Image (cartoon, rainbow, N blue to C red):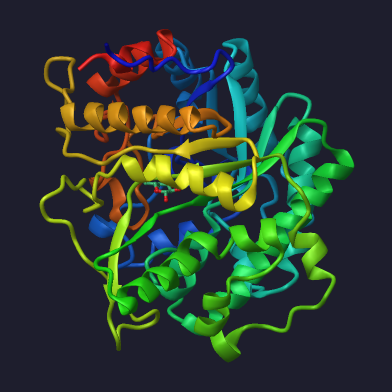
Length: 451
Ligand code: FCB
């Protein structure tokens, strides 16, 4: 007998995007520059000199894009606000035209019964704040709370779910350690300070929301389960180090009120002094956790490999995406169950999941067949359902991404969309994966039982 893959009635079916990756026109209508504006215009930072100047032009085409979401049957849409559109200097003066864009977008979504999930920070720090030290400056927590309050005041009457930060680990590691994302630093010593300030900023925004907000607010982390390459004690210890750095660095502080031991050992004397008032702030309870899941990692001990003495062991017999990320759906189930076991029964959302595979740049006959992406979604949705069967309180799923978009330092070369974008004409064409996802939504998951 085939399995029953139906999801709960209230389950949210969404797709996700972020401001700089899709909007285009980042300086329009009085917006200030962000660190991504500067980074993408710095030669050598992004492949093919791609920038977010035009992106998918969602800034002008948002109505048609919402129409597309509605046709696909989405019940929720996760997007981010560009901080510098509404506070061009990061703090102080509010730019009403910037607010107006999101105001219209939110209304267009609600007209179609699509519930907005709004991320406050998806990596585009106002340049003016980077000039003041950015995430290295303790004051960033107050700057972030000020911005959050402006957004709550403008939109909380219509936004049921807010997210403080998208993937703080990537903000820290990509932006300050491995030098691949804005602002483009390369200093492991900065890591613990950036992490601590991200956590304080998250806590400050949650506290601001508790004062003024009436709906729900959460945090989104990216998790990549770590598997040991062997049973050797060295490999097991390496696995723990990698797990502490990537998966527990943010969750232990917010839920357990402490940094993982392994991490304290890794950071050593670069750990900042932590005033006692920081912990109540960081552990302020919030309403849900969002998990971005793409892949797992098999690791081994690798002495002299900075900074963790850990190396990846590529699983060459498994399918990998265009990002060279191993396709491994079982780790999604495992990570969701792990969260419940380690941190308790907080409502969970899969806030990003998806895959870059080769698609044609131009659509010739109105169709884009993307069987590998269809199979990726099918297997991961099944894995999500397995987690529900194991008692996980999973409330929704967001495909990354609605549209092909600006994939950060990879530019437009990596296509994650369920909807194809021709970057010459900006024409949108739903791929086979969009049609498949539509059928999943319409059947509440029942079609996942098919081959
Ligand atoms: C996540 C980011 C998102 C996108 C996907 C592929 O880390 O949140 O913006 O880049 O990866």
